[in-house]
Length: 221
Length: 216
Image (cartoon, rainbow over all chains, first blue to last red; front, side):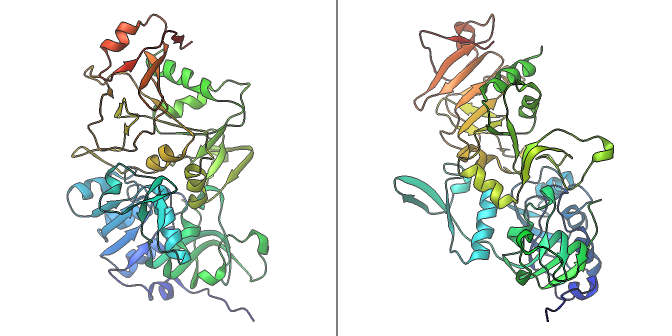
């Protein structure tokens, strides 16, 4: 019989640690695992090495971790939606490594799919090329970008069954499906948790085998 | 009509039926308001949808449906949603017909700088580098000069680049310039603007053809 992975937020948090490399999805405030972020803050974890697209807005989503000084380094494509992040980066309190948004996706895909890197034209002739091999294929040049992998990914789904098969809603998908593939430990929060077998197999967007723990989440605020 | 409205009205005339178009932040967003009614354009948002349809009223706001600035949006009939990985595959793979972006600087080699001003603006490039490397046509909407009257269209960009040889058209309040792989061709002039005025206000060298069209 298929087994439930549903646990309390405290049980889920007990598997995390300070200094972890953690993938956190979301586009500005959309599709952010708000319940799990609050859980990390309550559990006291710090020195986080975050991989995300951006840092939400001030005091919300990933912005909560920024505000509480829990992030030491962030790999992302954009911080412009959060003035507090910009100020802390300028002050040297958070180190940032910028990566183009599409390259971020491809590096996670490589990390989650057992691929040793990707060749992308994005960033050729720009500062993104510095220090990276440029490889020519059939007369075209590409930058070699290496895979991204994390200790932990925290994911926000609309509906999930108790073993973690899940569905995302509209543009709240964003980085959730790809991040679920690229971490050693995947914790999923879902707005609605249903019985195993209730979701139509053809509509499932992230296979439950990728998910370690399922936690009750809440809709976007 | 102010200069920005004039620029975006001309820009909206580039599209044809069925085109998937990505609009950047600022002036490019305004292009959506001026797409001719008889042209069926599909607005792409890189956070994961094709078929955006403007802001909702308060009653129909869904926080799981936002545009590329994070503002709640709506979907038109026939729209679809997808994850970021699929989104950037569509962009990089040449499936988006036009990307429309602003510029800090653009130059006569088709180079674009619009993501950082070292020491001043440190926000990151977001999806801009992928959009300009992957979209089939890259349109730059910009005022011809900066606040101090200096040309934004240069011989060579001075700021860190977003992409090399990527720009197809530059649309300003004075003219339309086309990067043809060798240089910037003065293709169209705004009403009342002369070739001499454009040359005087442009640092870049321009290619002046025998026939120059009108922006309206």
